[in-house]
Image 1 (spheres, rainbow, N blue to C red):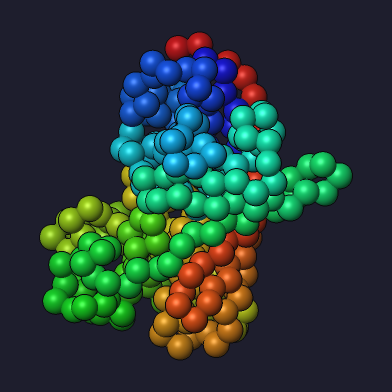
Image 2: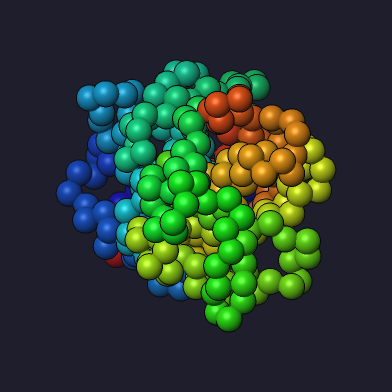
Length: 278
């Protein structure tokens, strides 16, 4: 099985042309290829296939084999993969995902992709949409107790569920322990949740560390960056509508309008290509 490995903001993915490989069990394949000791190693696995409603369809699976509705850094890698491999050879195209159709704009420089912009749609703050069972219409700085610690959480659906925690000092938070505990708090989040710990630097800069649902700690998360930006603005922590988010693996740029329709921009890089023999 021929594959490409790409990364965006430190989030790495294995991509396969599903038009050529139609009989794969995507869940079990994801677990095999994403294994960092016995496979290729990645945060997620994607295939492309023909779509009846968009230019191309994206199938996304987490490293644990669970299917994800969408992935922000993943869709940038996906866009580069299908463009570079001639599957979709347009600078503007649409991608069908389980979170709806997303619209892609490529910025080319010397015929190479420099930036990929994605229309992520509107952030949905309704607790029922996330979904979150807490007795609030929207979840903004709601206090919960996790692992014996009281935390103020804010949640949003950005294609996938995200929870954001504002911090003053990362050293005071065991991100892996708390992130995992919140992800698996299914009494609060029935479909589990991604968890982002963010520090607002100024009106135009946020740092972010992410625990991803189905993939554990990752160096970056595109939908997490989008969620962090809109929640920071919703809470009045930033005033502008254009933010650079610095993840542990790179940078993502997020802009949004007054209705929280979000555009995400960033780069993507092909690390290697090869053939998986198992």
